[in-house]
Each structure stands twice: as C-alpha cells, then as structure tokens.
Image (cartoon, rainbow, N blue to C red; front, side):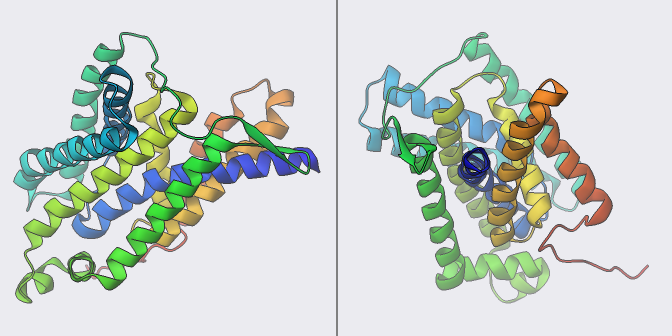
Length: 294
C-alpha cells in the first residue's frame, strides 16, 4: 500500500507540471484553433533563460523570474506575429506545420547552446524531503506543484472575471461574431500567445527544477500536447485533470511494470494514452464535439 501511495503522490505532483504545459497549448487553441508544437521550445527556452539569469548573471530569484517571463512573452509575440499571423486564412494544418517548423528551428539553437551537456539550477525552492506516513515527498516537487495550481487558479479567475478574459472567451467561440462585436481579434491572438508563452516558461522552470536542463526537455511539450488532447483542446479544467491522470498513469505503470518489462514503460505510457484517445474519444474528456454539415 505504501508503494502505491508513493507512486500515486509522485504521479499527481508531476502531473500538475504536465497540466501547466498542456494548458498553455489549450489557451492558444481556444483562441486561434491552432495546435501548437512550438510551446515545447518556449518551455525549454524559459527554463534556459531562468538558469542564465539565476546562475550565470546571479540575479535574485524574483528578478530572474521577471526577466524569464518577459523574454518568453517576447518569443511568443514574435512567433505569433511573424509565423502564425501571415497564415490567417490558410488551413489549420498549415499553421500546425508552421509550429512544428518553429520547434525544429529553435531546437537547433537550444541543442547548440547546451552542446550535449546539462544545466542545473542552484537551489531556489525548498530542498529535501519529508515523510508522510512512510511516503517520501520532495519539497521541491511539492513547491512546483503548488505554483502550478496557483497559476491555474489565476487563469480561471482571469477568464471568468476580467474584460480581456471575456473577450478571449468570445473570440474562442466565433472569430467573426467577436469581431462584429468590436473585439480586436488579432490583438486577442497576440495577447493569448504572450500569456501562454509566459505560462509555459514557468512550466519549463518547474520541469527543469525536477529533471535539469538537457536535450529531452523540449519534448515535454509533446506530453503537454497529449494532456491538451486528453482533457479536450478547449478545456482549461480538462487540462488540469488530464495532466494529473497522465502523471498517475505514468508513475503507476512505471512502478509496477518496469521490473517485469525491463524498463521504459513510463515513456511509452503517454503515447499509448494518446493512441487510445484518438481511437476512443478524439475530442478529449471535455472537448467540444463539432458536427459539420457537408
């Protein structure tokens, strides 16, 4: 029973980080209907920017965080303005391929900078572990999970209670009707890319605090995409639930099946889930099922 609780709690905590990455993809899709792969690199560069500010330039944590968010937001603005906006009116698949091209373009710079090495943060969150009835919990991972939940709470409040959030919700429902109501749809597109880039950069910092900064980090964005599809590409709450479920499934399957199967189950579990989603429920747990007349 203790083993089960250990796997489950670790899965929930890691799942919260997956959810934070997934919700950044949901935000872009809700407003623009574009599925973004570029957020994997925005995540990685967010983690890298924070390391440069914190460990190379020796800035205080709050300055490093503000600098990282600012640079990530700038990257999101540039990505939207110069790669996605010119494709307005083109097929959504073209825009999806463009985000993949951005991912591969930035991946070259990311790998070139790392040169095959990894980077680790100097301690900036609580270190060590504590024992909860035999279950060992990492203080750093728990802190990262708490930050992720606070960001989710802020996103829920922003979309429900602010004027800008309401405009974004209207835009996500129908671009033409939103524009006819006086909403600047292109401005909404830009703003949502900026916000989602800032969110995924924080997710990158949280992930890198657990796994360090090395070459597989951008591919956490793929798990974010799985989370977004699992929960429903239009649902912020769905991303939260799907992220936690993915973390649970990965850790439980790894804990119980790695031994008999020789390892690697954790990495395979996410893609098995993606396959099942596409076959059984392609719109996700809380996605909107769209029926088009042809």
